[in-house]
Amino acid sequence: MKNAAKSTGTWLHRFAIRLFTVILAILVFWVLGFFVEDIRSIPGPDYDSIEAKHLDLKLVGQRDALESQIAELTRQIGNQTEKQRIVGDSSRSLQQTINQLLELQRLGMQKSVAFSATEQANFSSSLNLFLDNQRKYQELSQTVSDMLARKQDMVQQKEELDRQIEQQRQPARAEYGAIMEKHRLKLAFLQLVILLPILAVAAVILVKKRSSIYFPLFLAVGIAVALKVTLVVHEYFPSRYFKYILIGGLLVVVGRLLVYFIHTIAFPKTQWLVKQYREAYERFLCPVCEYPIRIGPRRFLFWTRRTINKLVVPTDGSGQQEEAYTCPSCGNTLFEECASCHKVRHTMLPHCSHCGTEKEVQ
Ligand SMILES: [Zn+2]
Ligand SMILES: [Zn+2]
Image (cartoon, rainbow, N blue to C red; front, side):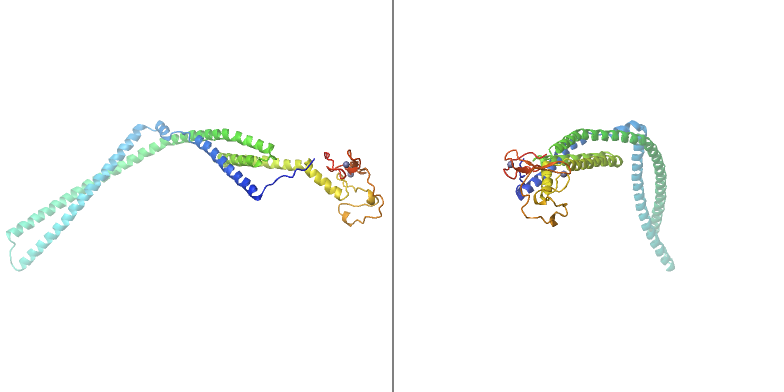
């Protein structure tokens, strides 16, 4: 078995792969967004039609009529008040005129000059006009106060009608709420019907192809779908359900990862196994049980993983000859005869150190 060195490519290539993985994830997320948007645009219940079923149209008509009457009355009151203001202004100026005429008369009386007939006529016509104005002002006041009383009455009636209509609206709102909730669930269901199978397929491919060179591609799709599903679930299901769904998902993912790592340790891949065996052979320890491999000049020594470096190995040349060897502790063959060159080779390493013949490492 040859360890084919995995090509990692240049920095630029690795960067490009990451960049395009991210871009692909965004694009997939975007495409899923189109599906989801189309489903969301399915129209929901119409509130106005539901309300129309529950409301007494006669009451609504009355209320609307009252409303327009009140508006009309408010306008008229405004008009009358304006008229009243004008009459009031005119009264005040007449009053000034009368005061001036009276002053003139008083001065005339002091000088014993009598009021002329014209002056007398002016005075009486001004006075008449003033009195007339005052009467008009009073009339307008009366009208305005009548109108205000009527308006108050109408406002009260309208409030009563509003209250009744509001009462009728409550069941309408409740019905609308119920129908809307159903509609939302339907939308959520439709979205998940599309998204969940894609997620499932993505997850299966991700797990199956985790050592494929196209892994980044599947990863991008998987992440995009998972994110979209999370968003949809979060939007449509109340957070108290969502909490459980999220924690359930996390449990599955974390559990899966844990199983994966435990599996990796329990059933190591050949590559890791060979590394582990090599390190053991380097220290002259049995790769399986770590009992020292006591051959050649080390035949009468003892060492462990920690003490191997302090060991003084006799160099008198005794026992240099290689021979097959089985671990006396666990019984695994550590050195054996090579099937090709018939010299002694490592049993648990892939190649013969003499002829290079490769064999499968168990
Ligand atoms: Zn052993
Ligand atoms: Zn050989």
